[in-house]
Length: 210
Image (cartoon, rainbow, N blue to C red; front, side, top):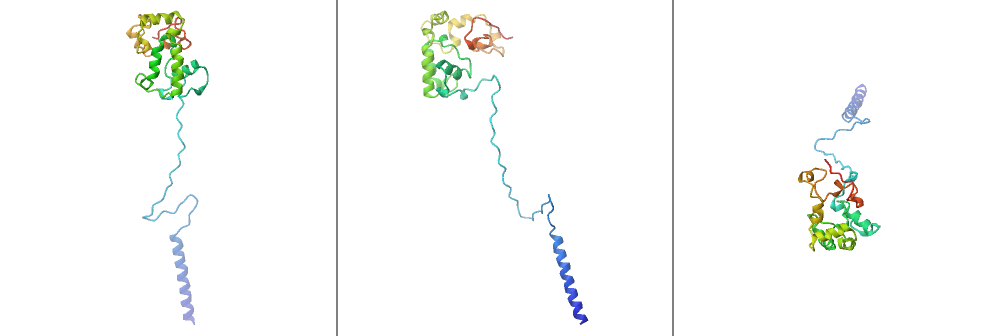
């Protein structure tokens, strides 16, 4: 009897020891602690969803790129408003009377090759701009400036504004050094020296940047 009891006691003791060993080899996870993965098992990581990146707004006073110019005449306003809004984003919207109607018609007809760049204009907008500019070209203006421009051209069509003989003569005292100044750059940059250029004023308030 004593032998049987000893056998049962040893058997139970072995079970307890074995259970204790198993629990020690698999410790419970505590807060912030993860059980390490066994060798050969790779974790699957889901890629994080990125928020859409917004393009930065243009800096105040900076002209938009050609591709950002309005492409539709549905923006409202008069034809003059639409012309100034469309062309004025890239450069000064020059007074139509500075050039003959034929120049404006050719310029819009060849808008895919606008001085080395393509203008993304919808047909309706192109038609609107062309009709406005041609209707207000030099030969349709009553100003003395427009008349002198036409006389200087003598029936020819210039390739650009800076080739109009009358305007070239008016700027004959502007030296090459003045044009090379960073704030000037070209005779086409009227607003650099004419403070009221955007309002159509070219006879007063002339200041050449240093």
